[in-house]
Length: 398
Image 1 (spheres, rainbow, N blue to C red):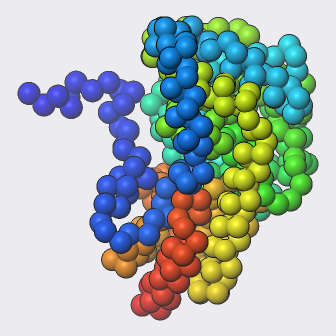
Image 2: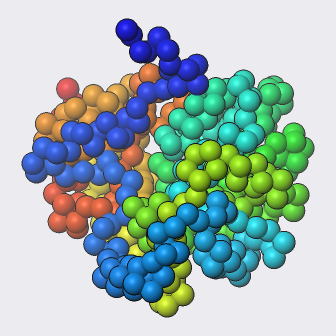
């Protein structure tokens, strides 16, 4: 029997994340990878986690290993809420739930809100996990270009004017994945104005916002929102460790209630031991000091990568200049295919993510590619960018 004939309409057209597929190529010895989206494992607080896990299992093992409540471990929920209130992101009336990573929050909100055919506007380029989530619910995706100061608000309004089915705008507002670009304050206000005018919701995905290493802080869309239009997603993956699978969501109470019910059908609750370890870590240590170390490390690596690109890449290849986060985005002149470039780069043991993985039309040809600077060593950044520069010169001169 051909089991594929039994697949649901929701999933039969989905493709595996090209980024995950690239990882399969990275087992080759000597590969320098700029393809990942992960934080530097050398910065994980492994020793502290080991000590906390031992203590928790010895003194609170029955709680840590038992079923938990769907909304999340109460002390951690309160800590997250208090931190976001103190940062001006939430008000005291807002609430949060803990999810199994930021990705689950996006999925739960979409399951609760989106019917087949509903419109979702996405930045182009955007996060493959978000795009595939919306595809899995048979949403109609619309793309809006990301400019140097964030999403093109003129194109955004054009879409909103011409399509009455649009329900949600999805944005990674700060240090965007994959571009590294941050939406300006002026544009944030315009986005909220358009959301009100055309009666849509906003997903603000902000897993990188704590990782600013230069420039000035910009208020989140959620902090500027006065009409409960922003659903806010955050994560511990980039500030503690992604393997803990801890994220959080703040949304209007009726939506949170729907999401909690949906979560009960997915995983019942988020890993209790991970939540307890995270809570003990953030309450016994200075999370701000820990984040400061991450900012310093990623800022240094980002500056090194940009310096190397300026030195070794052809002048026609441009790159973004992030003020934080984990990524920057490169653009070759029109007509060049970054998937073909990737094949040449892999022959020289260098990997990156081609732009097609980050676009709504993932079958088209794009001259762009994403580079991650957080995981490679400084030595590998220098070596890898120099090698990629040589590949680019040969590729563009061929």
